[in-house]
Length: 326
View (cartoon, helix red, strand yellow):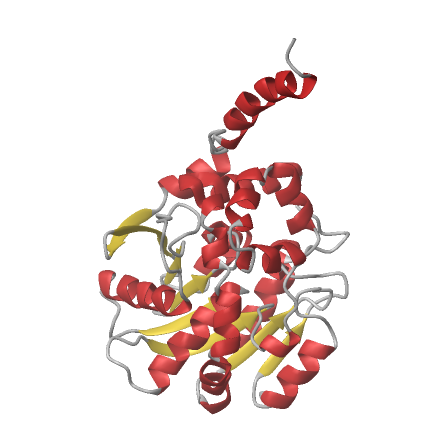
C-alpha cells in the first residue's frame, strides 16, 4: 500500500495544477461597457487601450488621466462624466501591463516606457501641438513627473503640459511605504512567480482594502472589477516586473522630484490623509517644504489612498477649483 502522503499528493497536485490555470473572471457589464467605449493603438507591437470622450462644447481644454498601481483607467469612472462637463476632450489609457492593454512577459517595465506611451498616444490622437492638462494618481504620478521632466527640458516628442495635478503617489521615496506584499514581490526572486500564481481574489481584495479608508471600502462588485482588470491578459503574472517602479523612483529621485521643483507649470496636489502608503503628516509636510508654490487640497480625514474612488465628488470639486483658478 502506498504511503498516505503519496496518495494525498496524487490528489493535490492535479488540483493545484487546475487552480493555477483558472481563467480570469468574466467582465462585468460595467467593465464591458468601459472596454466597448474605448479603442486601441499600437506602441512597439503592444496594443494599448484608451478612452477618448468628447465633452464640453464651450471648451477647448484637454485632460489626460494617468492611473495607479495595480489598477487601470477604470479608476476614473466615478469622475468621468463630471470631467466631460468641463473639458472638451477627456482621455485615459491603460499603461502597458495594466487593464485591457497588453501585458507582455518577460518584459522590462519602466516609468520611461509608460511616459513614451503617453507621448505616442498624444501623437496618435493628433494632439502634439495642443496644451494638455495631466491628472494623475499613484503610479501615474511618477509617469507624470517623467513627462514633466521631458517637457521642461524640451525633449523631442514631449507633450505640452498646461497643468499637473497629482494625487496620493510616492512622489518622495523617503515618505513612501509600499505594502509588504509589494516589497516581497519586487525583491522575491524565484519566489515571486509562485506567489503571483497563487494570488487569488481573497488575497487581492484584502490587500487592496488595506489602502482604502474604513468607511470608503469598495463594494464586492467593485473589488471584482479591479481583480478582473488585473487578471485580464494574465496581468497577475507581470506584477513583480511592474513593481520595479519602486526601485526606479529611488534611483531617479533627483530627476523626478527635480522636475516638480523647477517647473513653472501650475501644480496641485489632491490628498487623502488616511493613506498608509504616503502617510500624514510626514508626506504632506515634506511636499509643502519641497514644493512651496504648489497648491494643495486635503480631503476629509477618512479618505485614504484612492481619493477619486473614495470621495469622487470631493475629488472632482477640488480638481475643478484648481483648474479654474488660472
